Image (cartoon, rainbow, N blue to C red; front, side):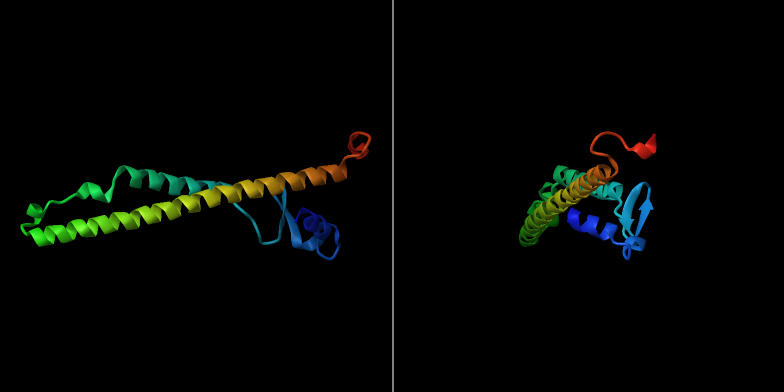
Length: 133
């Protein structure tokens, strides 16, 4: 993928597709806000922390709270099923947060590799860039 990026960047016909934004060369119209990805992951994790501290099971109604044993049992069964659904959602949300974090890491890794490759282009094999002197 990095080789493809280098090839596209070196082609004069595609050079206009790229622009510099905040010191980063990006495809025109495409920008990844890594801070937003991190905040989204943190938001999901914070929500999961709150869900973990307050379980649906904590509602734990007794049949006498409803004045009818069958209704109380039905509500208890509903709460058990509700908790099962919440547990499944939490598991999916954990996976989602992990994937967001992985995406941030992948973007940073590609950016670092691309920067190293570009630095290699501009650095002479025998020292610093003579044009900078």
